[in-house]
Image 1: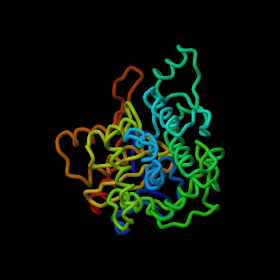
Image 2: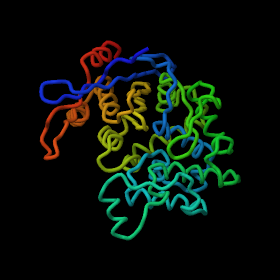
Image 3: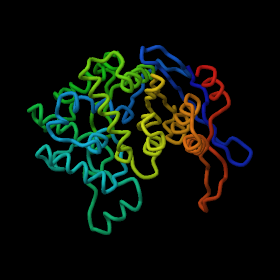
Length: 341
C-alpha cells in the first residue's frame, strides 16, 4: 500500500517536491478517530517515544530517590540541541546517581547549533556523550539502574534489567508484543521496537489522560507529562518545533519528534493521541504534518493560531533569506483531517 502525498514543497508557482506519509489519531479507549495511509505497518518510533521510556524512571521511585527536578525529567524525554544547559543538566543527573559522563554509552555528538559547536572549538574541547541529543534519556536509564541496584555497564543492551523494564511499559501502553524480530538499534545504541502507528497513537492518548492505567503508572505518566510542559526548553531547545509548540500551548499539548520523520503527540483535553510518519524521513514534512493535525483538531486563541500558521506553512528560503516557496499540507490531507475531526 502506497501512502498518500500529504505535504508539498513549492518553488514559485510549481510544486517542486512532495512527501508521502501516514497519520493515526486514536482516542483513549483505543478507537481510531482518523487513519490516513497505512497505520498498521510497523515503524520504528525512534526518539518520538522517549516520554514513554521515561515512565519507569518515575514509576519505580528512582526519580524521587534521586531528587530529580522537572527540568531533569524533561531532559530524560528529550532530543536536545546539545546546548550548555542541556549538557550541564545531564551531568548533574549523573552526579545525583554517583556517576559521570564516562558511564554514558550513547556516544559523542556535536551540538546541533553552530554557536554551541563553535564554543566547544574555541574552548579547545571536543563533544562527549553529554552533548549527545539523547544524553538525558541515558542519564535517566543510568539513574534507574543505580536505584534498582543493578550493573550500569551495558545498560543499552536489550536483556539489561533497565531495558526490560522499558520494554514492558511499552508493551503495556501500546498493547503490542515487542519481540526480537521487530527490534532494531537506535542511533544512541538502545533497542528500538517497531509497532504500528495506531498502537503508538493509543499509547500517547493513554499517556496524556491516564485512562485505564493503574494509579501508580497514571501518576508517573502525569509527572512526566507535566515535567515536559513545564520545562519545554529541556525537551529540545532553541528554534525547535517541540519546544515552540509546548511553550505556545501552555500544557494543552505534548509533542515529540523522532528520527526518520516520526512524530508523536498527546492532546489530553480531547483524549487523543497522535502518531505519524513521513515516508522519506524528512523532518520538515513531519513537522508540517503534526502542525496541521493540531491546527485542525484544536480550538485556537489568536496566539496559538499565529504559531501554528507559521509551522503549517514554513517558507523555503534562499541563501539571502528571501522566500522562494513554501512547505505546506496538501488539500487532500486537509480534507481527510477535517472529515475525521
